[in-house]
Length: 287
Ligand SMILES: C[S@@+](CC[C@H](N)C(=O)[O-])C[C@H]1O[C@@H](n2cnc3c(N)ncnc32)[C@H](O)[C@@H]1O
Image 1 (tube, helix red, strand yellow):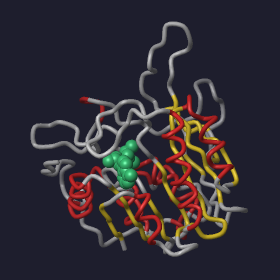
Image 2 (tube, protein in one colour; image 1 turned 45 degrees about the vertical axis):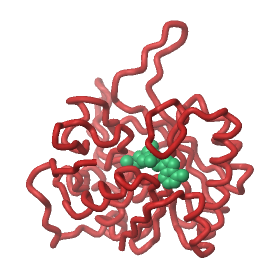
Image 3 (cartoon, rainbow, N blue to C red; image 1 turned 180 degrees about the vertical axis):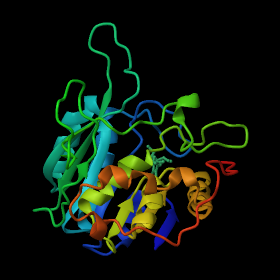
């Protein structure tokens, strides 16, 4: 079951009962001056982190004991992320480096930036953690074929970010003139890894900043329930249309062989055999 609710997550989070969610994916605006219709993305640092502290505390309240949060941010904010999670009761498990496979942001006086952080923390001891194995291609010169794949570590180098323009690929949602609908759309492969690692089928997943609804799209396919909150009514419409459209570009099935070495894969990834997927990757979304 997927519920898509329009509104300010700070208010909506109060409406959920305690201990409801097994996992939250937190991908807020990054306060870097982007053009959001319903969010001031250029706030004083203290105001922005005070706000995110309130969000993290409210998510903590409605997370079940042992439940997880995956909090995505710019690497330059690592210090704030760790402090905010600690001060709102979360226990850090990993600071994941997501190296995005795309070109680095060039810099004159320091190294070019090529990764984002995802802080994985839990409410006490983790309730669920599945050690995924992937069929990562060996490094050049590696002599032995890998017969059982490798465990996923805290460095994720195999998931491509959706960039602007052509390289965003089929997965990127576009309007009728071909423009990206939401520049911060997360890749399906990213949410697949997060949900597979820290939830079981039947669990409830929360996304307070749902954007285009990637979390809901993946949760539904994996047999997890999801509540998606989004303040912008246009994006709420996008999420609903996307869920109905079942675009082939959103299917998680193409990743199944990549995770095939995971010992309990069949029990955590219940393959939907009856699902009918749309033919193309495009759907007329007009937001
Ligand atoms: C970085 S984007 C999330 C992108 C998302 N992960 C995806 O896959 O599309 C952040 C989203 O948060 C929404 N937002 C901003 N303030 C909000 C609030 N107070 N409550 C709910 N949503 C909010 C923005 O409209 C934007 O769509």
